Picture 1 (cartoon, rainbow, N blue to C red):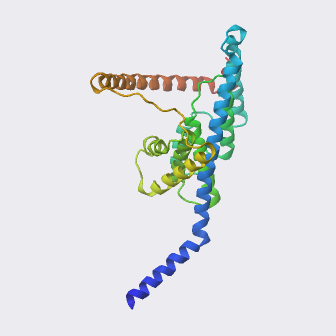
Picture 2 (cartoon, one colour; picture 1 turned 30 degrees about the horizontal axis):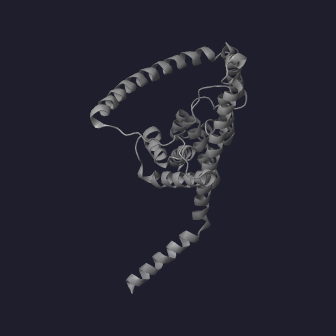
Picture 3 (cartoon, helix red, strand yellow; picture 1 turned 90 degrees about the vertical axis):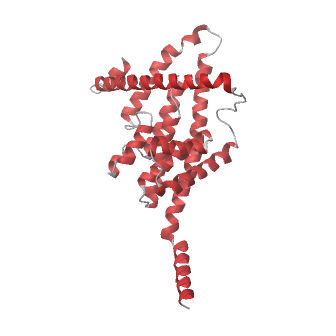
Length: 282
């Protein structure tokens, strides 16, 4: 009898937990946030592709005067983006990944809002699209990470969820998964770039967000391959030594490039801090 009574109490407690609004409301908000990440990431990808196509149409492939148009359009586009970022979207500067990583380590909610917010979602998408339309060499990975993290953090605020660090991680992974139709890449990105270690308490958040965002993108675009399908084969005896050599050389050159880029950017940032707009024009 004691065992039956104990099981009955557990069932009642479980039933009360599942029907409780306090339990379901945060989950529904989280699921809605993951789906919105998928939809907005796909919209972002489509806008970015259209912007690149617009630039190619403007410049043309036949030569003539349109061949030299980027010499005017691209610098003016950079100045416009810098002015918009400085005037209307402060905090949108940067690739997006460092901002999302920094937000995970911030404790103050106001500080987080300066780099992850709905205002920055609009700004990041708009500035990236304008930059691509002007010929800028901009990748979508970083901006999509910041967009996904911002959307999920906003969902956490609306749903009164406490796991801000895990939700930022989940939003970033969901953005990558939805934008490129690569669920595994989203999870690996969460481990490698954002988390550095796979925390047990964020497993469910990351997986659920990636699945829901991926389903949302599949619902819009179908089962597409953004980067195409490779049909080449690799011969072990002749090709694998070249693969190893390319990996070693590419890693060394990439590390050197990153080091030089960071040093140059620090110097430019210090030089540009006093008069941002005039010096950006220069």
